[in-house]
Length: 240
Image (cartoon, rainbow, N blue to C red; front, side, top):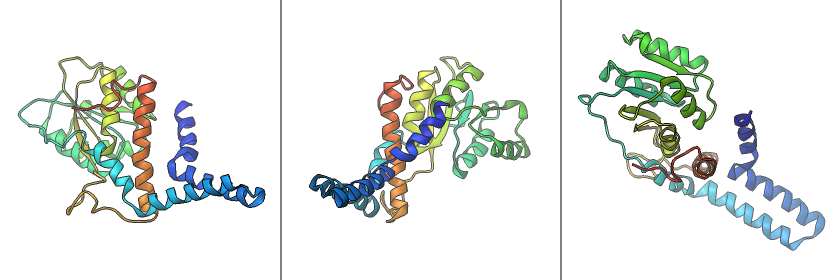
């Protein structure tokens, strides 16, 4: 229930949604009530939307998140006890497919996958992965639940090493959650949003894409604070 409430709350609390609501309501207030205060507030919110839509502020917020755990390809000669993948796109699936072969004894765990998880498992089995190595945590709906239910299922030991695969921008919060429940994780970030071939802002585009980037980055920063205040992570900004 809490996860559904948080998702519903974010529909309104997401920065761009909040700015649009503030702009609309204060503009109406300024027109109907002839309020100068409302007019100034509407103008400020509209400026915020313009900045979010036409500047790379979203990517700028993503850079420290994505660079918190620099990508380092794990040594195939150093054994890993397990590989955990959080919900994501094709880059994560490709990474699991390769790593499952590099570490043929590592346990594989997929969090938050429902129908799509069956296709992923079939793909791994077709590659020769033993189905007995594969675990699923389908009941999780949030990152903290990914960590909690994974710990309940896998019962990690302090001397075990686990590769954690998720989007680079999401990695700090994910690492904090898994550390808090006893996992010793090595980050394996994928799907970098702020890295292009010609520079950190090469992927910037204006309009709706910029607003989506801004909301995604803001959600991670807000999530870091909220998770720390509720004790779901081991640090405000988890690092190496």
